[in-house]
Structure formats: C-alpha cells, structure tokens
Length: 175
Length: 175
Image (cartoon, rainbow over all chains, first blue to last red):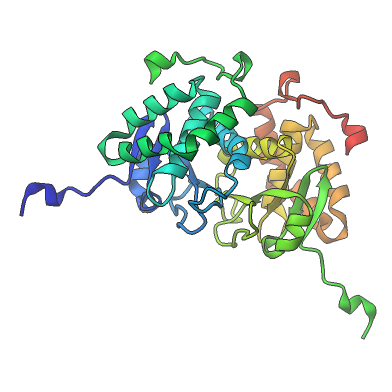
C-alpha cells in the first residue's frame, strides 16, 4: 500500500484570507472548522447537511446544481453576511456538494463585492488558492454559467470605495 | 363548538416593515412565507427545522435558549444578512421555538442596527407590532437577558448616519 493511500483528500481549503471553499464533507469536520476560525458556513445546496460545530452559524442558500436555479438573488445577502462575519474576526467556509460551481460562484461574487477584485482576478485568485483538490472545479466554473452569474452580480453591485472594508486591503499583497 | 376554535393561532406576524417574528411552525408555512415576500428565514435555534419554500434562504444561528449561549457574536452577521435581503426587495422572518426571547432579541438588535431605533423604542415597536400572539414573549424578553444582550450589541455597533439605508426611513412614519 503506497503512502498516498493514507492521505485523505481535503474537505476544504483556504482560497483567500478568511475565505474557505469546500465540499459537502467539510461541514462534518467539526474540529478542523473550529481550528480554522470558521464562524459562518455558507451551504449552497438543498440537500447537504449543515455544520454541527458549536458557535458556527449556517447560511443555507437552497439551490440545486441546475442552471435554472436563481442563485443571483441570494448573492448580495450572502456576501453581506460573509463580510460581517469576517469583519467580526471570524472566517467563512462556502461549500456545496463537490466544492465546484455553486460554491466557487459564491466565493467569486464575494471577492468581487468585498475584496475589490475584477471577475477575472477573482477567478485567478480562487483557482490559485484552491489548490489541486479544487482548482479543476474552479476552472470549470469560470468557463460556464458562473461567469455569466458573477458578471450579472458585478453589474448590479459594483464595488465602490465606500464599500471597501474599513481597513482597505491591497489585493496584490493580501491575496 | 365556538367559532374561535376554528381559528388557528398565527405562526408569524409582521413587527415592522419587511420584518416578521415567528415560532418554529412558521418555517413550515410555505405558502404563507411566499405570499409574505419572505426571502430569508433566520432560525435562532439548534433543533428547529428550516424552511423548505423554494427560493427562501435560511440563516441558522445555532443557540439553545440558554443564557450561557453566545448569541451576541452572531448578531452583526445576522443583521447584515437581514438588511441585505430587505434592500434587495425581500423580507425576513426571524423565528425560534416559541417566537419569544431568542428571536425577539434578534429583531430588536436589527431594529437598532439598521432602522436607527434606540433599545427602548425597538422594544416598543416590537411589542406593539407583535400583537396578542407574541407580545407576551416580547415583553418577557425586554425584562430579561435580551436587554443586556441588545445593550451590549448597541455599544459594539452604534448606528451612525452612514449605516442608515440608502433611502433613510422615518421610524415614526414607517413603523
């Protein structure tokens, strides 16, 4: 048996400061959630279980992985809750079944809305931060409907200077 | 059998514009949720079920009805999500098991944080809006630990002019 057989694949990964992306098994990794300082889980699914870690809130965005689902309508409240959790000193985990298109779309929207990144830069940051376990999904996301979704979101909610965090981050350094 | 026997008690009620308070049965009232324009349910409990209405998101704040639970840490992200849902044209339902202290505390915090009300005025508005089905709980809430909780929240996050909605509301008229 090779050593690689003993290494479990990660259930979530840090894609930007205080922002984690994961799959449906992430919510069950109670100890890891707490050790990572995660205070808010965004569960972008109808069927996947929520976290049971004490003190960790769950925002469930009830959409199937289906282009006909309206994820856009949920992005602004979701991103606002995420930013408030981060500003309060916590961190967010965004997950769906596989940690691919739905959760990557929410992360991308958040990076655009509150970290001042363009759509293209948000995709780069996400794919780069996601690492081998998740970058494939992110790349897939960027090619498909998530691009249209996040572009529509960016038009509705352009980032303006007053939207930036109280201590503005330099994306090129912080990310 | 008197006519009153045929009238089911309400599961939730409007306490301020776009803000509903309810008990654990509220989440199951799918048709009523949709008819009321509710887009975000805040479930202030560990055990009560979430909504299954299509398009309705759920923010679960996982606290028991126990003074030792830290509800304060969740108030800012919760209120931010609520305000974003309202600004997006939706409405929020906040509920716990009985629609009493936990959910009333969250409504009070929200009225202070985003509607510019003092703690005392928020309690008045809440108790008045709650009506017979819920005002008892609200009055109870105002006398007990929720007062300390919301006072602490108000000190951490004082409402400032730039925090007010883009179209400021006149509380005396709008509420």
